[in-house]
Image 1 (tube, rainbow, N blue to C red):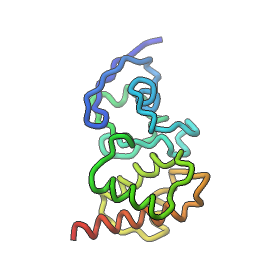
Image 2: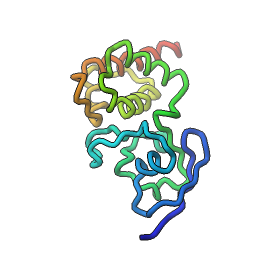
Image 3: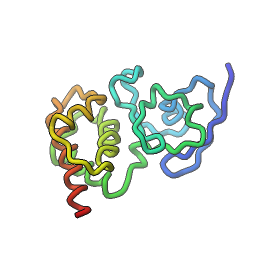
Image 4: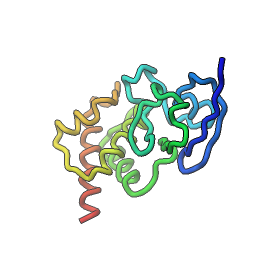
Length: 159
């Protein structure tokens, strides 16, 4: 089996690992770097539990080959910080948007990307924007309230 060396920035820290060529980004993050906040659910790109930011865009880490991330910047739930992240965490807590917590890292990272757009979303738009993340516990109402609330608070803070 061939191996590759991947150099990338993870949570603002330069990282290097030599792994089998078929290694996914999720496995690289979890197994090589110990960042277990990136959860593996379906491993088919359907559930969204493995969502991370790759060069500022949300991606499914279970479908992304580590080799394709050479030179990229990755942010996981462990490295998410700043005012938007704090607003999102507070909104998820306040709105009851988490229960078992398995889907939460992927949900928060997807919401973070939406919050950075500073665009008000209707309930239907928020549902559509978050439809790539599956939760088996909450029934989504709290999640959608949290997403809309965090976005609105971000827009207000800039006014």
